[in-house]
Image (cartoon, rainbow, N blue to C red):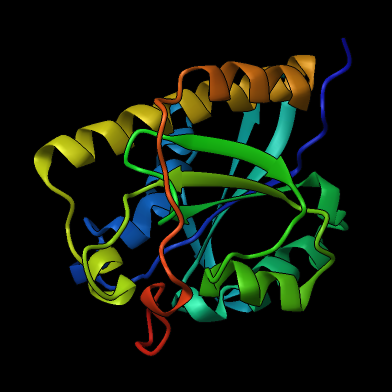
Length: 210
């Protein structure tokens, strides 16, 4: 079975230290775990407005990117790296926090809408929508989404989020070696049932890092 090519994997988050352990930085956690597993290291790249690192995964050379522009301006950084290295949108995977899914649920898909996620919306405004999405569940907010995603998860929730990030890193290898369909089947089979959609006005939007 042919693999699905990837050349750029992006984790969305906010750069300041106070955001490091928040739900909204689940994408950064994902990119960081990939770097740790595959011997990569991030370096600041001002021309790309982000931290960039290279890894070799399943025989493929892949760039890892953490935009340092705050969440709602992530698209310029992604487009800059993709344009510079001549990477097509279908060769890009973007990992980010997903309010619609409870902690521990993670899903992979290609294309589609942003479902109110400001970081994904901005990426979509800067490049073709055919990029892959890795949606990492962080739970439905009890109130407004912005307060929820910019807060630190409970110990149990963080454990569940980290476990699904580990599963996602495994799925990246499967995707490269055996294709996206196999990776999605493996990833989605582990998900517990659940994950309702919060009202759109609970998904946040006003703060710089939202």
